[in-house]
Length: 86
Image 1 (cartoon, rainbow, N blue to C red):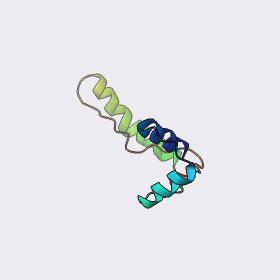
Image 2 (image 1 turned 30 degrees about the horizontal axis):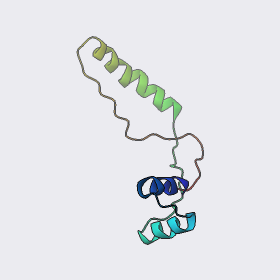
Image 3 (image 1 turned 135 degrees about the horizontal axis):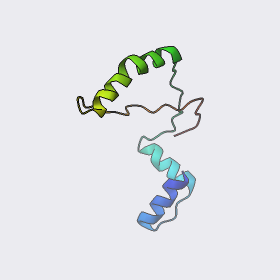
């Protein structure tokens, strides 16, 4: 809320209270959303097997120029609980 108050003041020069901003944002359809934890059950042995049998040989081939390897960070998981409101 503080960030919204600062941003609106910077853009308009009009000081508004937190309740005014909250009411306006709610009228626009914005609401608090609780963050949740994405369940992840990792298998360390399965990850190690993937690294040794599939990933490592492909990285060696890429180092020799025989293959191209691209990494995509599609999701970034936080270890442990991450609670809050957004």
